[in-house]
Every structure is written in structure tokens, then in C-alpha cells.
Image (cartoon, rainbow, N blue to C red):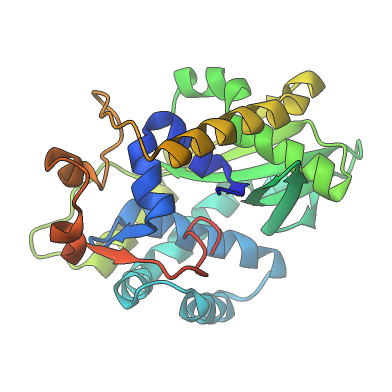
Length: 298
């Protein structure tokens, strides 16, 4: 029986139960590299280490060590090493854009995994950090995102974001912190194509330099406030979703759909071939071992 849930697994199930089945129950990871996902992981490694205020070369050495410790396929680790050249200009751009603002805060918690028991299931996840405003003493959740698309329509709806609400819920319940506001920090991905003879390392270095020189365009930050009622409602939201997950698990029937304009699904071809017999597609996927964490928690 399904006994744990994360924000990502919950939203994957809401988006398509079939995708949840392949990704979380069958534990399938695509062999094809998802560079947007890998870059996001690399940026979060940098964000966790930057509080140490290391010299640039020492920071890169620490990042290399952290990459080597990840339980990821070799191809993903090699991809991260190629991307490392994009980190220094990206980090410099972030410092120049927000360094003065960041002097108003101290870090109370860096990237931290949490587990919270709700009845007969566990809510799990990983928060990016908690900050304290040095002037007011207010505690704020820090959430770092890498994204290509943002804008007013996204920021307007952030108070409805289940991930942010869930992380506030977890910080309150697991760590006893009175946190109701979020600093939502976005490092945007330039919409530029890789040149025909440009290798991955040069491409990510070029994107980093573009962020550095056009900081107002590629670094965005906004506060998001949640009511306590909204935060408290997250427990019911989780319980409702896991009840439906268990219903699908018990029946063996996982609905599959592919909404127009939905983020590309790595399991689309499986569904196009009927969705039941997946053995023919196994050369396209890696099966995570029973005890291996989903990449979102590793």
C-alpha cells in the first residue's frame, strides 16, 4: 500500500495517474538526459554551499565532490560536470542582483529533508531554506527555482501553489517555526539555442555569462504570503490525494491522459502503445532499486 507522498508525487498524480504509476510505482527514470532537471539540481547544490562563503575555486571543488556523491546515473553526473562552467557567472549575477538585499537576512536552515507522519502515511520533501529578517525577526521560507517562463500571471497565482503551501506546512509542523511568507527566487534560463558545433560546457558557460550581463532579465524575486487557514488545509489536501492513489492501486486502474500544452511526458510512447506492456520500452528507461530515493529527494 502506498504509504508516503511528496508534493511532486501528488501533483504528478493529479496531472496524470498513469504518469504517477510509471514514475513512482514502477520507478522508471528515462535514460534520455533531461537537462532542465539536471541544471536545477546543480543550482540547488550551489545554493546549499554558498552559505559557506567559499572562495570560487573551493566552491567548485565542493560542488564536484557533491556531484560525485549523488546516486545518479553516470551520464547525469557527467552532464553536471559539463554544466559546472555555467555556475560561476550565474552565481556572480545572482550576487550582483540580490547581494545587497540578502544582507537583511541570516540563514536559519539550508536545504533540509523532512518527514511528517499524518495518520497512516508520511509526507516527505526537501525545503531549500529558512531565513530570518535581521530587522524584524520574521522567519521566511526560501524557495529557489530555475525556470524559462515566469511573469505576472505566474506570480499572481503563487498563493495557490501547493508546493509552497506544503513546505510552509512542513516547516511549521516538523521544525516548529512560525513561517507564513515565502521568498520566491527565480534564476531564469535564457531562450538561446546551442550552436551546431558548440559543446555542452561552452553552451552553459554562455548562458551563465548572459545572466551575468543581463541581470534584471534573468533574476527575479517576489514575496508570497499564505494565510494560516491555507497552510492548515494542506493536511486534508494530502489525505484526499493519497486516498485516490490507494484506490487506483487497489483497482490496478490508472487513468492516463495527455492534456494539450502539458509539459512533455517521458512516458508518452508507452501510452501510445497501449500502456500495459512496457517491456519493449525498457531500453529507454532505468528502473530505480526498491530502496532508492526518487531523484527529487536524492
